[in-house]
Image 1: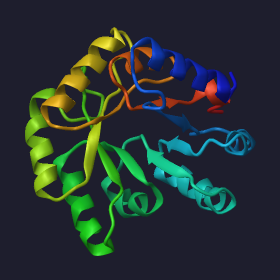
Image 2: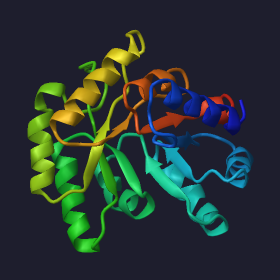
Image 3: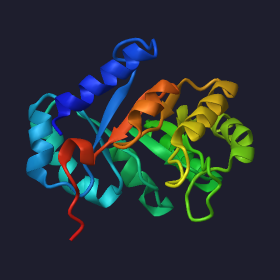
Image 4: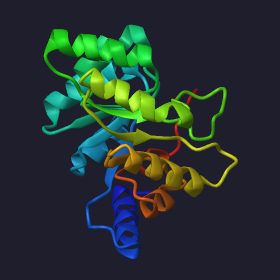
Length: 217
């Protein structure tokens, strides 16, 4: 599905639910995608991309950023503590701040380096034991801790359980963000981004619907 089809669907859903045009940012998720597909989307003029792994992003984006001006790179996958410094130099936005230890590491490195990417806190809205993210009951205290550390937390992120109605999780995330005075919501993927927009998503993460199916072989 071409990029223009996704941007049209986003615009239609914004209009349908009375959102301002352009209030939803499309993150094109380029993880495990062949370079030629990524370049094709860059050549169409898109500039906001998401990657899951620091190592993979480090292998392709420095060169692409030299070729194409204005790229904004988002880390949407889990961040290991030992990759924090590298991630902070590579990404403009990190969506997966999910534990106090990581928040403290980011704060320490930000002080040393003099800069910090924008940050989203990942919330485990489904309270799934195998999934990363702050538990909903712990969120308010964690937001306060991040603010005490001086971190630029701009919003919340979630990945709903695969077997549950995603809009319930999107609504929960929106409620938690509002309660904490956070305006940005990273939620919604290829299969459910329209329902995320209806619940107030400011960033949707769409990969296979733009680039085609991934080949993990």
